[in-house]
Length: 433
Image (cartoon, rainbow, N blue to C red):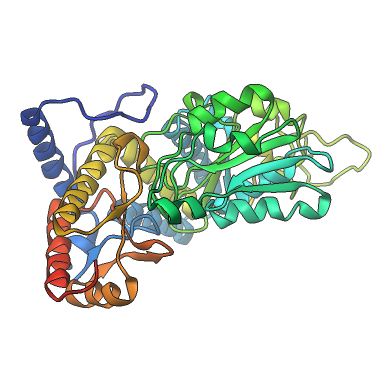
């Protein structure tokens, strides 16, 4: 087992452009490559299978031995212990503490476990007060799970304003990060919320959520962030961003099984919601529930005074066990700063090689405006898809823009080199670029 040096507890903020010298950069890249080569052994699919180049971490990474051990331990407890629930509840609270630390939340109680990102987004959306004629603002390429959550409230006379960005991209060929200026023409005195992903799932731009919050939160406008492509991938400080709430699945950057997610609500935003009632009330939300489980309808219902009121009793405890194990591993062994730097190194290398081959990589070039782990190649999936899958066993995502390649902590420079060789072969075969 690898050693477990403790990571710093300082706030994690998105790093800017690398200002080290070329010699220092080469040494750092060598250090990261050697370090993550050790951790790659924890992912048997890639470490023991030369027929697969897994480049699809933004969808769902392959599992690893840290998570496998946690699930196996959970299963053994379920098999052999008469009442493991006390232990599992302790694991749940430790997972809550670790996830709060991971995103630099004010307190563990600002975190509610959910089934997935959709449930987290929907919980906040349905709890937010509005009047007929009020509006919310999203961009036209926002993830469907956020957009549909808001669109469902149109029947209650909430206006959903979609900021057009696709037409401009088609016109200029340039994908830019979203900032306050992008949204400003669509925000007015009736705007109640802005829904935005911190990192776009399809094009990989790193949106200026901090700037958006600085511009609009003082006006009482909530900012609901989808951070599913951010947590466990790039350092995240929700307090520094200034967001009202954030929802995320734990099956992406935190490598858990599907079926477990989290909702963060800032204490300030929670107070502004004026004692919100969860859209689905579970007994886990009720602070004054009678121990005999008999509900006296004459008593006032007192909910937990924080995000925990959005939680359900029968959550995925096996998912929570995986979350506790891998989040600890991410914080105390991998190290958020090193994960981010490793991923930026891999995407930077791929971008450079694509430029050499004349293959366009979509999205911003500036490091501060692009995701650490995502590259979208402007290639025709119909021609390139079968070639990349068939020649080298590459696993990636085809989306509206082209071929999305995404890296995880388990990927290596050799993965990039093998993939580039496949691209070179495709160019030699005169596939369109």
